[in-house]
Every structure is written in structure tokens, then in C-alpha cells.
Image (cartoon, rainbow over all chains, first blue to last red):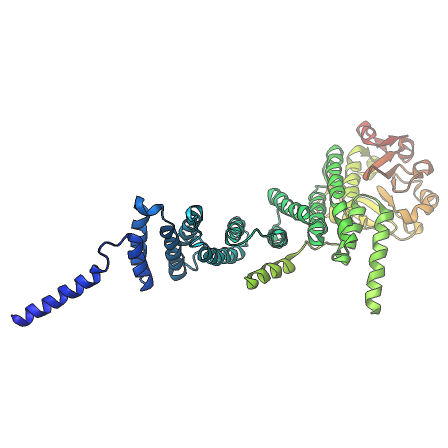
Length: 300
Length: 173
């Protein structure tokens, strides 16, 4: 009997000492206690409670630790989940922190977390760059940029934007090539991306070349799909459309030529465009240039 | 971060651009559509409505292979289509349509002598040949293929021209 009493007393004492630490402490402190012990589920429970407590929501530390705990939860449980709610909660909490942290007490640590989270969104943007999820890729790339801005001084994203848009357009372009029946809306979308690149860098060879090829191919596809039975009035209308497309392709290919981008293919493109425009003199001019560089390469 | 940047670059390098196919001849396809239409607007004598409908091509042109492709799917009324290639005027045999390429334009008078007893529509692609005996001549106007029609030259070979074709021609003589 005495032995049982001693055991029970020991248990009560142990439990009391564990919970005793919490007496008078707020949800954030409790969450921090468990965070330090790497017990993330318990830390989450208390920080979520703190987020509901009006006395705590005005305090920077609430949002800082919420951002930190959810970032760790993301790392622990959802690192491979591109849609991870933990990561979004972390971002949202840290943004809230920035809006109320007038003393800048947590700024430096928050910036480090923004940097980390930004890199995860960047990685997921790259991983999502495929025909099915490219919209997510664009969305995550934009989140990445937002977070980098929050993490540090204003950054010039021009070169990164160009790289991203080129990768995006190239991926969509490659997918279009595989389709036997071309999706005209997709073609327009890809053209739009290349146009955006050219606005950022008018001397971008790849964008100029590719948009030229898109217009050229569009015209060729129309001609290839013509039925021999097509009546002459319809044929004339088709010629108008195709001529317009060849004319649209031309300035981009000329620019690509000026930039010496992908020179051999550009010369073939220019010769073909002028052929489509029935300008045989200029077609021959570019064919001759192509022959000249081909023989130069052979002699090397 | 650098690792991911290189993924973007790699993707870009692997996929930039469409491959241009130098074998596509857009003008040949358009001319083939024109020529097939001519068979609907021109009437050949009864004796030419039996057997194969023959399109002859003299000279070097990618139109020849386009016309061969056309024979795989098209007929002229009940007549199957066939395409013959001639290297020189002496090789020319009976055809419904004879297409004279630019490189053989200088042989026009010799060719006309060769076909004078036939009902052949003479089609050319060189400026000025309308006045030298061609029935139809392809011309370029504002980057587009058009055709000129010399009704007299067509009818000389006992062919009838529909007024609809006259209306569609760029110029009619």
C-alpha cells in the first residue's frame, strides 16, 4: 500500500512539473517550448491557438513564430508537395509580421526565411514547367519574385524573367511541335511570351528567331492543309492570310539574321519566307549566303 | 538556386525553335490548286474526256512532285489524273495541260509547234508569254500568285473557257 502511494506521488509530481512550466504562459511561449523540443505538431497546436487570441495577434513574435513553425512543418512533412498549405501559411504569417514589426526585431530572421521559401517556390516553378502545370510554374515564379523582394533590397529581375519566359515558351513550343492539329490559342500564347521577351530585350536572338518561325509555320500549315479542290476565291483569301503571316515573320527573322543567331537555320528561314512571298531574288540572295557559309564550314 | 537556374537553361537549349523543313514548297502547292481549278473551268473536246487526264511538265520544278501528290487523291470528272515530265520539247506527247517552267520559257515557240494539233492548255510562269502563245500565265502581284488569261490562245486549241474563269483572272486578253 505504501509502495503504491509513493509511485502515485511520483507520477503526480512529474506531471505537475511538466505542466507547471506553462502556468501563466501564453500560447506563443508554449509553442516555442515545443518547437525547441522539435515537437512540431504540439508547437502548431499552440501557435494556432495564439493566432486566435486577440491579445497575441498584435504582437510581432506571434507571426514570427507562426512563420517559423509552419516553415519547419513544411520542411518536415510537405517538402515534396508543391501545393503545401504549410508553406503558404508560413509566407502569409511572415508577411503579416512585416506589416506590424515596427521595431524590426525579427526582420533579419524573417528575411532569411523569405529567402529559403523563395528558393523552394523557384524550385517548384522549375519542376512545374511542363504542358500540364505551366500555369502553376508561372504563379510560383511570381511568388518567388515577391518573396525575394521581401527578403532583400529591390532586385532587377529582367535577366531572370527572360530566362524563365524563354524556358516556358520553348517548352510550350516543343509541345506544339508534337501536335498534328495545332492549337491556335496555344500558338498565340507562345507568340505572346516571345513578344514579352522581345519587349524586355529586343536583341534576344532566340525570341526573334522563334516568333519568326511560329508565324512562318502557321502560314505553311495553312498551305499544306489546303485541299486541291479549294475554289479560286477561297484560294485568294487564303493567300492573303498566308502572305500576311509571312510578312509578320519577316522582321523577326531579319533581326535574328542581324544578330547572327542560329545563322544557318535563320538563312533557311529567310529563304523560305521570301519564297512564300514570291520574291525569288531575295530568296536566292539568302540561299547564296547559306551556300557560302556551308562551304566555309566545309573548308575549316 | 544555381542548380535550378541551370535546369531552366538546359530546357531552353534543348528546345529552342521549330525545325525548318527546306523541302516545303508553298508556291508549288498554291499553283497545284490553281491548276486543278483550271480543269473545272475549261472544257476539253469529247475525245479528250476518255482515258487519263494528263498534265505534262517541261523543265525543273517542285510543282511536278506536288502534282504527282495530287494524282493520289484527285480525278478530273471520271478521268484519273497522271503527270508526265518532259526534259525537252521533242519528248512532249499528248497532254491536256502542259506546264512550261521558267527555265524552258525560251523554248515556247518550239513547244507550241509540237502541240499545235492537240487540245492542250499551255500554262507558263514568265512575264510576257501571254503575248507569245501561252493560254494561262502565272504572275506575281503583291507577293501573291495570280494568273493572266489569253482566251484566244486557249480557244485556238479547241478548248472552251468558262466566263467564271475570266472573272477570276488578274487580266484577260
